[in-house]
Length: 195
Ligand SMILES: Cc1cc2nc3c(=O)[nH]c(=O)nc-3n(C[C@H](O)[C@H](O)[C@H](O)COP(=O)(O)O)c2cc1C
Image 1 (cartoon, rainbow, N blue to C red):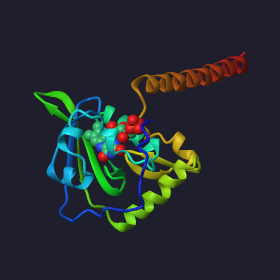
Image 2 (image 1 turned 120 degrees about the horizontal axis):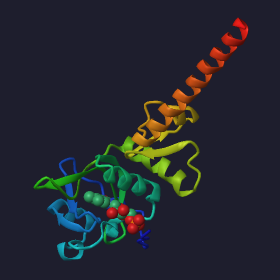
Image 3 (image 1 turned 180 degrees about the vertical axis):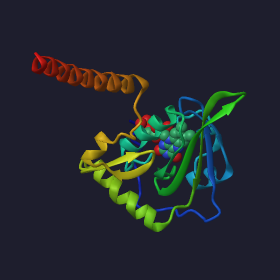
């Protein structure tokens, strides 16, 4: 995990019209940034192109958020979540990021992020929740597809949860075995009663 030290408490507030865009290769190395990215982050194009995207990582961001981001992207799904980024001078800015895989000639070519200005409520909620993760005390909170959600015990047994084909087969075979044992038991009981 990269820790970019020397941060300030100064927030750079985005403009409503800001749209901060970057593209990376499959390993998260920056291949493209737009003008808004340059202006807000304070880095130069030369510093950013070819660098790992963690160049703008803020130390307040919990590793769980990025683990969830990469897990979601590797499952070929888009990730929408709150990110606190660090400017080159140590200031910070909050974004609502939409990160998605992108394709060229039907081949997965990399990932793309488009960021916009979040509301103050979104910033406060993410800030409070991320602090709990940073303190290793998230309680029943977890980050799923970028959203901060409450994980309830019953969710573990939620049948709508995505299962692999293997686990589904194991479940079906297990259920069928139990059913066959019950039917067999009832059959034996019936036979012994008839005798
Ligand atoms: C398209 C794309 C955009 C990303 N944008 C950011 C970003 O704005 N800020 C950030 O800290 N990490 C971003 N990341 C995640 C980084 O690649 C990295 O996982 C994260 O900074 C944590 O780095 P570390 O685990 O090396 O400390 C992005 C990744 C991708 C694929």
